[in-house]
Image (tube, rainbow, N blue to C red; front, side):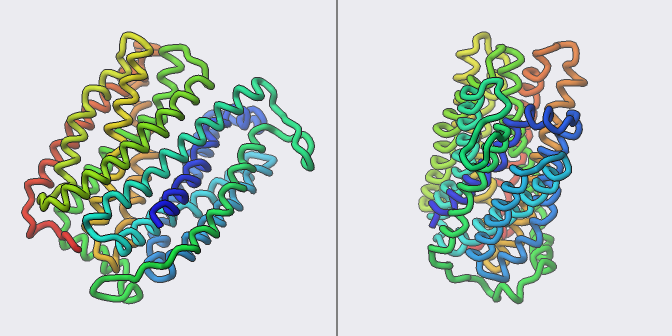
Length: 422
């Protein structure tokens, strides 16, 4: 079951990460500017991905989670196919809206299933296996992009049997749609876990979920805050790292794509799995509040490679630091998701996790990505190509310190205040 959920997450990230690698050719074909590109890559997707996350959570809590996941996967596969056949900017924009809508069910659906299917001392690893899908999917997108860049070089079009001459970016998006479709059927093969909790999901409303969070507002406020801080340390950092290697070290895009793809697959996925295993062992050992304790350890260990990677004196040292940073800090996503599944009652898991994914989606995609750019453009404008490197270093340093402080506050909270549920 966890492996199938991992695959679901993986194909969602293949769809999500493929477009940025192809955007230069799409930009030329559609004759659009950088602002329109940013709206296509980020805004169009996050508008429906975040905006529909709450309805997705309600669907997950009311209906068969397998059916909701299958329908969502099928819908974003069709939307990706629509993007592959787009002939203008607005067709592509509509397709990206559809992809975001379909993928909005992945997080709430997986979290709810894991919450009911696994015991507390097994959930950490289950969450980690699901979260590993993000690294596997992102790595697959990077490696696929690198292969295409090397294979076609500057050739804008390729010949495909039955379709004739098509643009190379269309081939990639068409392939993404095809590999996603079987997963929509695969999620129907495992048994729907029995729901647990004090009330039936039909009786649980979003109002009750919000009331539960309000009752324990101190805990949830700090959890949402620290998960927002740590998501910026991971996701937008990964978006800007390729630009840093290209600008500072003058590496080619295929080389960057291949190297980061391999590193994401090995170190990113390992980080998630290790985090889940450690959390489960801490739970079995009876450690009070193991999640914030482990969060503190991760932020402290990731501090040095995070701030030194952009400032390294050689490209080899920069890659080593990037690998260490991935190995340590990618686990923050597992930690954050494990925190939410630990706090949410079973009958409200879909709704509360949907609010959580709405929050981290907006923070990570909109605020976080822009934060690194704003710091580079306004604080380090004098540094030229090094501006993004200085930005990565300083932002990570500040976020790591703030995250440790918030995790420490959560660790110090009494069990009476924390709404831990079985």
